Image 1 (cartoon, rainbow, N blue to C red):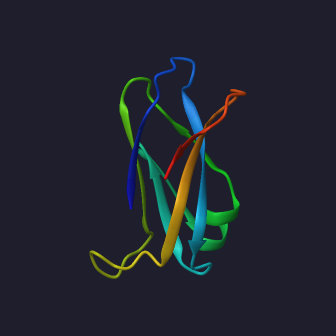
Image 2: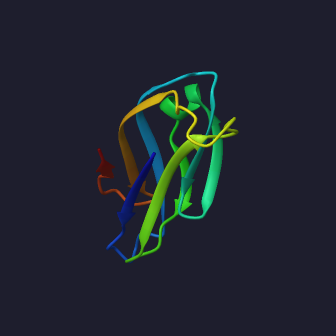
Image 3: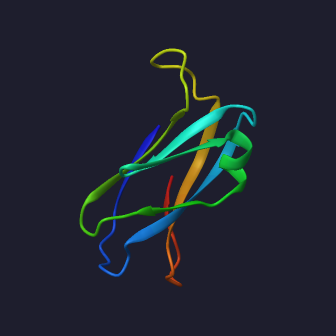
Length: 99
């Protein structure tokens, strides 16, 4: 699963990510924002704020969610993501939701 965001604000250098939906709590997932990755359980994926991840101003930043150790290409994600929300770090403004 992939999404893409662009930060137009030069003050934003990093953001945290919150994933909403359903995921297999025992599956390990790799969450990648830009060039940084984090591996988490499905339970943590749906309950924790992840990051911070660097976000470059004016550049497209990819967000991807994959099984951490897939048995083969195209393995089922075992998750249904309803939204991804990036929240600028140390900034009081609302996050950017990707649905």
